[in-house]
Image (cartoon, rainbow, N blue to C red; front, side, top):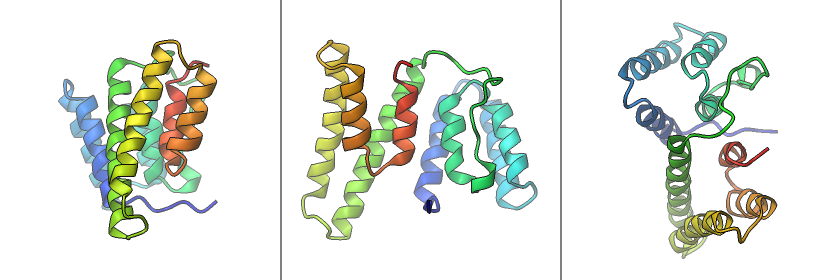
Amino acid sequence: MVTQKPSRKDAYEYVYTVRDHFQDNREIYDTFLKVLKDFHSDRIGPSDVRSKMIELFKGDQHLLLGFNKFLPEGSKITLESDQTLPKKPEFHQALDFVRKVKVTTFTHSVEKWMDNSINDARLQDDRAYMSFITILKMHIEGKKCVTEVYHEVSEVLLRDHPDLREEFAFFLPS
């Protein structure tokens, strides 16, 4: 499988996600930025940055998995059974994810519009985001089971966003 190199936009989105997540713990955020600078300037390699991220984000599965986008294939972070991860997602994690879906679907629509691949791309992906919210609401109201939610969100709405599909699975019951 060929993976796309992450864009500058991807990097900024991830940094903003980390910043927002650690808004009450500036020390972790500053350490994160230092590690990124060291990695970018080749002072540390992929295995070192991987180890430092696991240490910094211990227990924050969505941040650990989100960082994989920036690591080469042989250095991807896996969630091993000995890592202590929360059993249930926290509210801020869900909020971060919803924001990421909104930004990603909007950006995706603008890119389509600029490529002239479809004329109503913005409208289409606004609908995708609103459909995402509606599906979640229906599940909360008991009108959709987890299987339906997973299929509609992962296989339909987020089919062009494998990173979001993987992260979405974190929020579903086992």
